[in-house]
Amino acid sequence: MMAGKKQPINLLLIKGNKHLTKEEIESRKSGEVQADSGHVEPPDYLSQPQKKQFAEIADELLKIEIISNLDCNALANYIIALDNYIRFSRLVKRTSATAENIAVLEKAVNMQDKAFKQCRAAASDLGLTISSRCKLVVPKKEEEPKSKWDKYKSG
Image 1: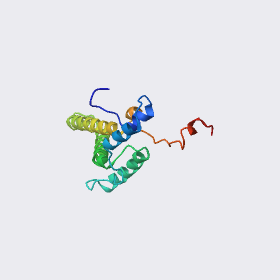
Image 2 (image 1 turned 180 degrees about the vertical axis):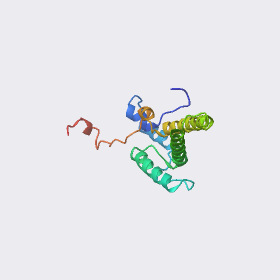
Image 3 (image 1 turned 60 degrees about the vertical axis):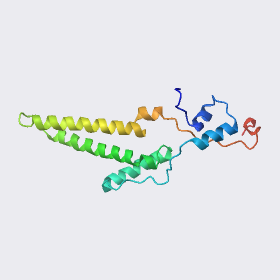
Image 4 (image 1 turned 90 degrees about the vertical axis):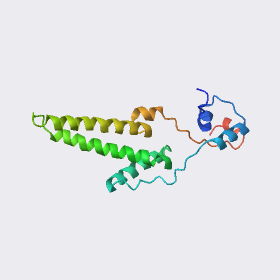
Protein backbone atom coordinates (compact mmCIF):
# COMPACT_ATOMS: atom_id res chain seq x y z
CA MET A 1 0.00 0.00 0.00
CA MET A 2 1.39 3.38 -1.01
CA ALA A 3 1.76 6.15 1.52
CA GLY A 4 -1.28 8.41 1.69
CA LYS A 5 -3.73 5.74 0.50
CA LYS A 6 -5.30 4.45 3.69
CA GLN A 7 -7.83 1.66 3.57
CA PRO A 8 -11.15 2.16 5.36
CA ILE A 9 -10.94 1.05 8.98
CA ASN A 10 -13.78 -1.48 8.56
CA LEU A 11 -11.83 -3.14 5.76
CA LEU A 12 -8.70 -3.31 7.92
CA LEU A 13 -10.67 -4.84 10.78
CA ILE A 14 -12.20 -7.48 8.51
CA LYS A 15 -8.82 -8.38 7.04
CA GLY A 16 -7.50 -8.72 10.58
CA ASN A 17 -3.90 -7.93 9.71
CA LYS A 18 -3.72 -4.71 11.73
CA HIS A 19 -3.71 -4.60 15.51
CA LEU A 20 -5.20 -1.28 16.50
CA THR A 21 -6.34 -0.04 19.88
CA LYS A 22 -9.97 1.00 20.39
CA GLU A 23 -8.78 4.63 20.45
CA GLU A 24 -6.98 4.22 17.11
CA ILE A 25 -10.07 2.59 15.57
CA GLU A 26 -12.39 5.36 16.79
CA SER A 27 -9.94 8.03 15.64
CA ARG A 28 -9.76 6.48 12.17
CA LYS A 29 -13.54 6.08 11.96
CA SER A 30 -14.16 9.70 12.91
CA GLY A 31 -11.70 10.86 10.25
CA GLU A 32 -13.19 8.83 7.37
CA VAL A 33 -15.56 10.37 4.88
CA GLN A 34 -18.95 8.65 4.85
CA ALA A 35 -21.43 9.57 2.12
CA ASP A 36 -25.16 9.47 2.83
CA SER A 37 -27.14 6.82 0.99
CA GLY A 38 -30.55 7.99 2.16
CA HIS A 39 -31.46 10.04 -0.91
CA VAL A 40 -30.31 8.02 -3.91
CA GLU A 41 -32.74 9.37 -6.51
CA PRO A 42 -32.64 9.69 -10.30
CA PRO A 43 -31.65 13.12 -11.64
CA ASP A 44 -34.39 15.18 -13.31
CA TYR A 45 -32.70 15.02 -16.73
CA LEU A 46 -33.48 11.30 -17.12
CA SER A 47 -36.59 10.21 -19.03
CA GLN A 48 -39.31 8.21 -17.22
CA PRO A 49 -38.05 4.84 -18.54
CA GLN A 50 -34.49 5.84 -17.58
CA LYS A 51 -35.67 6.81 -14.07
CA LYS A 52 -37.30 3.40 -13.72
CA GLN A 53 -34.06 1.70 -14.77
CA PHE A 54 -32.12 3.96 -12.37
CA ALA A 55 -34.37 2.90 -9.48
CA GLU A 56 -33.96 -0.81 -10.29
CA ILE A 57 -30.16 -0.64 -10.46
CA ALA A 58 -29.90 1.70 -7.45
CA ASP A 59 -31.97 -0.75 -5.37
CA GLU A 60 -29.53 -3.55 -6.19
CA LEU A 61 -26.52 -1.35 -5.36
CA LEU A 62 -28.13 -0.23 -2.10
CA LYS A 63 -28.59 -3.88 -1.09
CA ILE A 64 -24.84 -4.41 -1.30
CA GLU A 65 -24.14 -0.99 0.22
CA ILE A 66 -21.95 0.43 -2.53
CA ILE A 67 -23.94 3.44 -3.72
CA SER A 68 -24.41 6.81 -2.07
CA ASN A 69 -26.01 10.14 -2.91
CA LEU A 70 -22.73 11.13 -4.55
CA ASP A 71 -23.10 8.37 -7.18
CA CYS A 72 -26.45 9.42 -8.67
CA ASN A 73 -24.95 11.24 -11.66
CA ALA A 74 -22.53 8.38 -12.32
CA LEU A 75 -25.42 5.92 -12.45
CA ALA A 76 -27.40 8.32 -14.66
CA ASN A 77 -24.41 8.58 -17.02
CA TYR A 78 -24.28 4.78 -17.24
CA ILE A 79 -27.98 4.60 -18.12
CA ILE A 80 -27.64 7.31 -20.80
CA ALA A 81 -24.59 5.57 -22.30
CA LEU A 82 -26.46 2.25 -22.31
CA ASP A 83 -29.44 3.86 -24.06
CA ASN A 84 -27.11 5.37 -26.67
CA TYR A 85 -25.39 2.02 -27.19
CA ILE A 86 -28.75 0.29 -27.72
CA ARG A 87 -29.92 3.04 -30.10
CA PHE A 88 -26.76 2.81 -32.25
CA SER A 89 -26.81 -0.98 -32.15
CA ARG A 90 -30.35 -0.94 -33.58
CA LEU A 91 -29.25 1.52 -36.27
CA VAL A 92 -26.31 -0.72 -37.22
CA LYS A 93 -28.63 -3.72 -37.37
CA ARG A 94 -31.13 -1.89 -39.64
CA THR A 95 -28.52 -0.44 -41.99
CA SER A 96 -27.53 -2.73 -44.83
CA ALA A 97 -23.93 -2.76 -45.99
CA THR A 98 -24.48 -1.42 -49.48
CA ALA A 99 -22.33 1.05 -51.37
CA GLU A 100 -24.90 3.80 -50.76
CA ASN A 101 -25.11 3.14 -47.00
CA ILE A 102 -21.47 2.44 -46.20
CA ALA A 103 -20.83 5.98 -44.83
CA VAL A 104 -23.95 5.84 -42.64
CA LEU A 105 -23.06 2.36 -41.43
CA GLU A 106 -19.46 3.38 -40.66
CA LYS A 107 -20.62 6.40 -38.66
CA ALA A 108 -23.20 4.30 -36.79
CA VAL A 109 -20.58 1.65 -35.94
CA ASN A 110 -18.19 4.35 -34.68
CA MET A 111 -20.92 5.89 -32.51
CA GLN A 112 -21.91 2.42 -31.26
CA ASP A 113 -18.27 1.77 -30.29
CA LYS A 114 -17.98 5.11 -28.44
CA ALA A 115 -21.24 4.50 -26.58
CA PHE A 116 -20.09 0.97 -25.66
CA LYS A 117 -16.82 2.29 -24.23
CA GLN A 118 -18.64 4.95 -22.21
CA CYS A 119 -21.13 2.39 -20.95
CA ARG A 120 -18.43 -0.11 -20.00
CA ALA A 121 -16.35 2.52 -18.16
CA ALA A 122 -19.39 3.73 -16.20
CA ALA A 123 -20.45 0.14 -15.44
CA SER A 124 -16.98 -0.68 -14.17
CA ASP A 125 -16.92 2.40 -11.92
CA LEU A 126 -20.25 1.36 -10.38
CA GLY A 127 -19.40 -2.33 -9.88
CA LEU A 128 -21.85 -3.41 -12.58
CA THR A 129 -19.45 -5.76 -14.37
CA ILE A 130 -18.29 -9.15 -13.17
CA SER A 131 -14.64 -8.11 -13.08
CA SER A 132 -15.32 -4.86 -11.20
CA ARG A 133 -17.49 -6.69 -8.62
CA CYS A 134 -14.70 -9.20 -8.06
CA LYS A 135 -12.42 -6.30 -7.11
CA LEU A 136 -14.92 -4.83 -4.64
CA VAL A 137 -14.45 -5.47 -0.97
CA VAL A 138 -17.52 -4.36 0.89
CA PRO A 139 -17.00 -4.29 4.65
CA LYS A 140 -19.72 -6.08 6.61
CA LYS A 141 -20.54 -5.16 10.16
CA GLU A 142 -19.87 -7.94 12.62
CA GLU A 143 -21.71 -8.15 15.89
CA GLU A 144 -19.53 -7.42 18.87
CA PRO A 145 -19.43 -10.30 21.37
CA LYS A 146 -21.12 -9.44 24.67
CA SER A 147 -18.04 -10.50 26.55
CA LYS A 148 -14.54 -11.23 25.39
CA TRP A 149 -15.20 -14.96 26.00
CA ASP A 150 -18.36 -15.22 23.87
CA LYS A 151 -16.36 -15.75 20.69
CA TYR A 152 -15.05 -19.03 22.11
CA LYS A 153 -18.46 -20.42 23.05
CA SER A 154 -20.12 -22.80 20.64
CA GLY A 155 -23.50 -21.80 19.28
